[in-house]
Every structure is written in structure tokens, then in C-alpha cells.
Length: 237
Image 1 (spheres, rainbow, N blue to C red):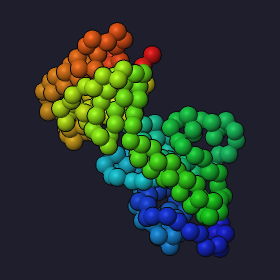
Image 2 (cartoon, rainbow, N blue to C red; image 1 turned 120 degrees about the vertical axis):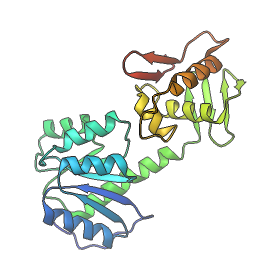
Image 3 (cartoon, helix red, strand yellow; image 1 turned 135 degrees about the vertical axis):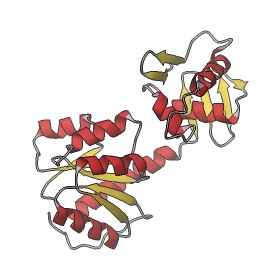
Image 4 (cartoon, helix red, strand yellow; image 1 turned 120 degrees about the horizontal axis):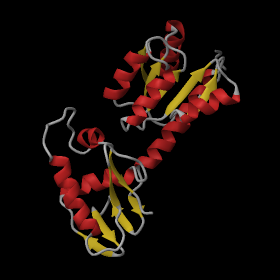
């Protein structure tokens, strides 16, 4: 790990989670990010890192691959399975092509081999943050002939306007953001209802049923599918 010694410009402050078991390396990153205008939290093992990432609101995560208690790839895969889409930069001394491919397939967004220059690491983190921010600012989602406009708060299918209640709109927006992916009940409870526990009710089933009726009744092709034992998936084909 080296410091290029150059002054680096940045746009906006990021909140970064560093999951790194080497205390000296982690403290170096925290200090360097701070000097660049960002804030960073540190986790010294995989279990602690997973807990922080799962409960915190971070712009980007920097994750070491080899760690005690839980390795970095396991942490990333578990977070992705829970619907956490925070961009991840994997750090590792393992730099072979197969190692990088394995890391990216586990859910990483970028991969940087140790030793590294902090200027490059920071540039990569900023790119990941910009991509994620651009995705969040999308105002129109489309799945097949279904269209949702976040600004006008309107929904249309095949040009026909569909009236939704606020919760139904939020549910559909979340499903459309994750179109083609299985969305679990836990993901819906946490991201649509802001519940971090199971209320032991059929609230999800009721709203999904109502939403399905509104976006599919009178149309030929179903869009909202139940994935038995897993959750739901919105897909256009």
C-alpha cells in the first residue's frame, strides 16, 4: 500500500465502511479517507462488518477478502441475498484472474489487488459512488409495457393509467428497481414497510394481491410472479 502523494479532488462527502482485519491498514484508510473529505467506519472481522453493513447506511464498502470469523466474499454474498446493493470494492492479495472473477461473481463491484496506491483506490470508490448515485436518480422505471414515473407518481401499462395507493406505489417501485430478481419477504418488510422484524401478519400477501390485480387485470401477460418458498419477481418476459 502506497500513497501517491497527489492532491485528489472529490465531489461530495461519502460514508464508507472499511472491513479489514489488519488494524494498521484499516486506520490508514480511515485517515486517508478523512483527509479526502469523507468519513469511514472500521470493522476488524467479517461478522462485525456484516452487522455494520446490514444496519448502516453506507455509500460504498471496501472489503478485504481474507478475514477472521467470516471471509469477505461470504459477507458480500450474504448482504446481496438480503437486498443490500451498496457498491463494494474488494481488496485482496489474491490477484489472479480467477480470484478476481470469483470476487466479482460473489457480488463485488470492483476488485483491487494489494499493494495499491490510495489515489487509485479513492478514484475507484468515487466511481462506484457516482454510478450508484446515478442509478438512484432514475425517475422512470420500465418493465415490459409497465411504466412507473417517480416524479409524477404515476403508473401506466400499455399507455393506460393505473391508480395505486401510496404503499402499493412504493411496493411496485421497489419491485421494478429489482426487476428480474427474486425479492424476499424480508426485503419487502425492511424496504417498503420499514419493519426490521416479522410482524406475523399477511400484510405483504394482501398488498401483493392488490397490486397484481391492478397491474394485470385486463392485460394479457402476467408480470408479477410468486417464487414458491423464496418471494416475488417482477419480469416482463
